[in-house]
Length: 238
Image (cartoon, rainbow, N blue to C red; front, side, top):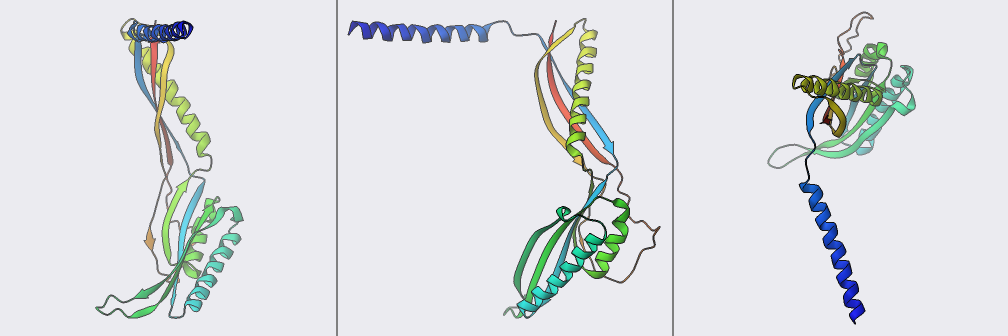
């Protein structure tokens, strides 16, 4: 019985000593730090465009509505393949079918609506104008979005982060020098959410009108894609 009491007493002393040591550490002298924020932006020309295109078909017979929609989708896929788009860059996003009724007090059945959204990633921007013209003439009747972007986003984001860290170090050194101090090792570092902005985005419904564009007639200016990074760094002062 006495041995158990002694053992418990010894364990209690161990935990008390550990707690006292931790408290002493927390109450010890705080490190002398300088905290700064570094930011960086990289602007590059887009090298791809993501097209979110919709095809809607209606008929009082569900089978016919689906058949019409399938025929239009096949045209869209055929045009994409002719433009050099690889199968991995073509994706069916949504497909739904629903009955359509009038908004009268006693709704009347108008027919069935079949809608399918296809996302196409076009990596050759020189083919954008001609592909969109053909799609509008022969297939799609809704544009959900057109977004210009870059394929190597991860690489550019890493580069922007590296430049942001370098900017933070330069800022810390300059600020410390004004106070006659020297910057030492980093104490803490964190990254805020980066920002990507593309050159152009669109969302609209369209109607095919048979109009074709000339080979030298461009209606889109994709501009540049901006990829930014922001980091917060605390350095020890020596």
